[in-house]
Length: 226
Image (cartoon, rainbow, N blue to C red; front, side, top):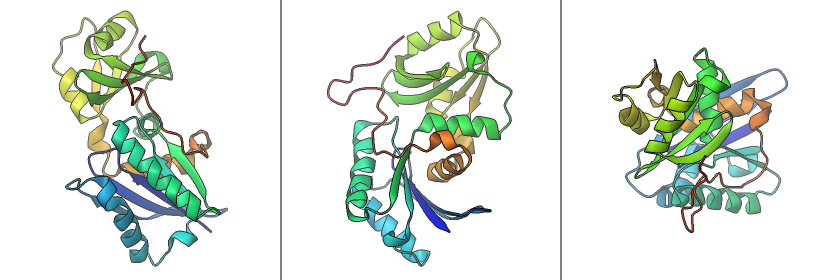
């Protein structure tokens, strides 16, 4: 039996999930959600220790750590990966993986049985100000609001999958063609829980590294644009 511990600080609430896996079975054991009243830097280590003690486990017993590595603010991603790198230094026998939010959203889209394909599906996550994180044709970019509207107008996009803030930004618009807008955030109780499900079911999501998933560089906030 192997234990997998996932944690996320990129979402509104800090979340931690624990699962086990063996040759014939896999199961989610427990989840923990901490409202973002304090900085995740102040709460993540204490929350991890509390969560493991609650489940009668220690860090040494965790075989794999899974970290949500973006896209999100530079500070949130840096906190997540700093904690993970610190753990990897101390618990060198464990494996450390990252997974980004677009992978989780794509898995959720499949789970909900939406009928889509790459050329008619657009995922939009809110970034900051007038900037959104998007995925279209399996390519992720940071885009401004008006750039996204042009993308929708010029391509055969029929289904837009959003987080809560992006849903508010795009749901009241009038498009020249029928567009379905789905708020996937309503289906996300715990992002780390979905990260584990995605990790266990999709071998492509297993990236053994601790690299950030930035769409905007932290130093200058330069964007990748179409």
